[in-house]
Length: 101
Image (tube, rainbow, N blue to C red):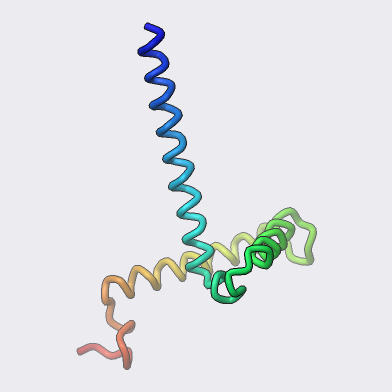
């Protein structure tokens, strides 16, 4: 019984670790998708500073209302996801010239 429980605990730990790793990779992908890697010359301190300022804004320490800031950023993010999805699907209007063939 102890061996079975240890095996289950190990599996649960491994699953949780894989989920956390995947989540962190996805977050890193968002940083790259936003262009922060290129814009900061891959300077991690600069990227962290930008993220800290964003977090401060969401805490209400800036001039903008946190709810308005979150809504504005969400709209921008959704537009970026939509544009990527359309580009991947070859949606008309995304091709050079923007006209239908």
